[in-house]
Image 1 (cartoon, one colour):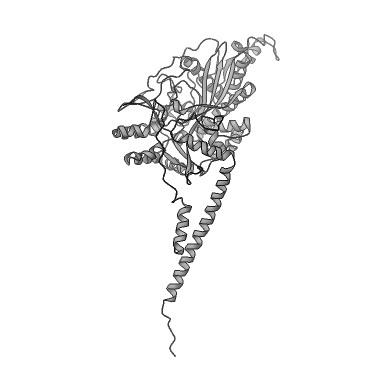
Image 2: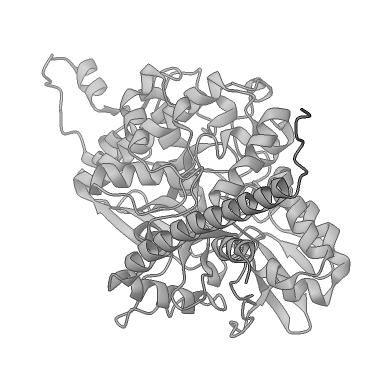
Amino acid sequence: MSIVGVGLGALASLLGCRSRSYTPPEQPMPANAVLLSQMMREDPAFNEQLLASLAPDKNAKGKHGPVLMTPGLIDELRTRLLGQDWSGLDRFPGWTMHRITPTVRVVGHVAGKDATLEADSSVKPGSQPGGGANQSADMAQPGAKHAWLDVGEYALDKEQTISLDAPSTLKGFSLEGQITDLGHGVTRGDGPNEFAPEHSESERLAYVLNRLAASSGSLGSKFYVDQTPFVGHVLGEITRSGGVAQAKLEAQLNSPEDLISAMIAGGHSVEVIDARYFANFAHMHYKGPHGDQEVMAPFWIDSGIEVPNAHGRHLLVPVSHAELEWKIRGPHINADVSWYFGVDGKAEWRVMDTLDQAWVLKRAAHTYTGAQAVEVTRLAGLATVAYTHLHEVHGKIPFGGYFAFGVCQDVVSAIEKKLTGKVTLFPNTADGSFFTDARDAEFNAMMREVPKDREAKYAEPERIFGSLPAAPDASGHFSAITIPGLADDLNATYAAWKDGSLDRARNQSALIKTWLFFGAAIGVGVYFAVKTRRFLDRQPVQRKRL
């Protein structure tokens, strides 16, 4: 073999050109689920409807929505659909974060804030249309506080003291406007879950927590909740300052953490769960030849980790959704609410009573109670205020700041770091240059502690496995995961990580690639040097005439 052949062969190996092709398995599948690729094979005419339904201005209603379908990703999806690349569709897009990030930046350079997206996002799952963000003229103003914080009837410009003693008068759960018929036997949207019967109480509590966060963060007029329904008239008429008026004032709660603390003191059970799910970027159901089925549509990321004994193939993992969930049970209030920064651009408490498809699973990474539950509530309130400040300053940022300000994982990661000393979520995308407002110094410092994955070509195994909505069983297998082929890859990679061979293999691979690079460079350099010398040797020598 020639020197150049050796050099180019080494370069091909370096670039992974010799790795074997891989076709993801399509079985086994849960009885009630169908792969997105299988649905599309059965009805190719659905291509354009699928693409239209996944555009950014249609993707904000669902509970999870941590997947931002940028124009670049939509184009890639269209290419795979039209090319009938079913394997590619089953691992869509399968890109590293390093490759995904520029697709968002391109939009940032050319697009303004999408008013349609925000109007569409103002209706929360399970709510009546028009019952989302406060219907104020401020909704039309890009940086207005009301546009980015759902407070129901508790207007930011009105000082109020309310009581939660009486049951909520808000409407109950409704599917109106939540299920969309896309044709071809496909619907988008999910039904109620086990928390739907308490929707009215949960929605009121979400509004109150958001309004208390705004009040404690000086985002509007003062807002108080009377604490006497939870802890009784503990102050009586004698206070530190004296007088009935002062007693009443001191009996008022004016921050989210004060409310949760009072609930605990009043006999309520409060758990805050750090919950992890697989993201569902389609939220579709298909009525086809096999009856009603959930459409399995994960959004895949290249972790940069090589699967053991897979000839250099990288571990692709579905992106996860993370949120904080408050489970409150007691004599006055029974409610379940969640908090996360969503694709609607809002960092706030929300209802959580729409059904998750079975394949997305759920894992409680951490459960906080007592003083820790109060502290998580305080930190979530800080985040709500900080993100509202971000919107005031950057009102026209595309996608409501989603991705630039982070994704659903970022704040959950920051709070996890604060309470446990580590971060076990991937990916985190917040651009630290936005988090500089002096009013939010504590929260900004927390965000600086979170690993940044915007340019990542490789993710730490601990964060890959920590993001999963299922833990390994006693034998180290991810048997709860039903996405075809994923559990096998996770089992092999997890075992190698635990026994140390994954790190050894990565170090060895990096060393081999380094030697291949230099070998290829030397080979090509020698080849051109020899060719140049031969060329010069063949040139006629001109002699001087005497």
